[in-house]
Each structure stands twice: as C-alpha cells, then as structure tokens.
Length: 146
Image 1: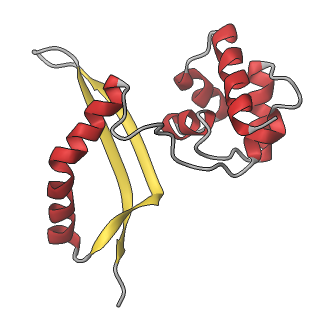
Image 2 (image 1 turned 135 degrees about the horizontal axis):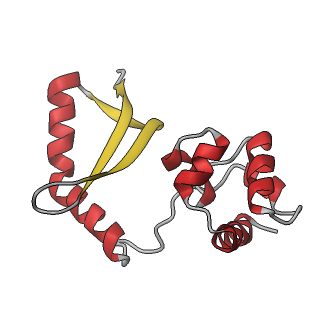
C-alpha cells in the first residue's frame, strides 16, 4: 500500500465515522491544522499517533504503518492550481507575496520565514458584512548567513 492509497482509505473511514478534523484533533490532543495536513499526506504521524488515529477511524491494519512514513511533500497537481479555494490563496500570494517578503525583510532583516518550523491556523471571524476567513502563517525567521 502506498501513501496515496492510505490517504484515500483514511478519508473513506473519516467520512464513514462522521468525524471532522477538529474533533479528531481534539481527541488526539494535536493541532487541527497539523493533523489535517498529516491526514492529507503532508506529514508523517508518530507511531502512537498513527495507532490512535487507526483506532478512532477503525482503519485496516495495513494502513496504520504507512501513515508514519516520511512523505513526498507538495500537493498541487498543477500550477496555477485549479481548485477555486486553493487558486484564491495562490492568487493572494501572487499579489501580496512580494509585500510579505518586503515587510519580513524590513522587520527582521535579510532572511526567510521557515515552512519547517511552522504553524498554521484557519479561523472563522464573524463581521457585520458576513463571515471572513483568517489564515495565520506562523513561521520561524531564519536569517541568511554569508
């Protein structure tokens, strides 16, 4: 069984059991965004986490060890992406990516935001104009060394 087959089986079980990512993360005591990415094949789970998820979702025994393997990261099948939600995030980075870079450099100096030492949060905000999506990218600053 490969990782994409395991991911497919994992999501079939998630649908069958009626769990959302938030509930699974709470039951496992892990970050919701991290668990979602892991369940989409972007992070490996520790053995105990894979076993716990396997029990919660009643996964077939052969799926669990595959969830601990180090994945090939990156999930866009095409650039630009075709999914409307992912495309709008891509579009926002096309428009504001250089702004983000300039402000990071102004505030921190010459360097980058790490996507390895990284946290993500997606929040719903209620406003008078209707609900808004708040995406928080929280990465460690890594200065360039010459």
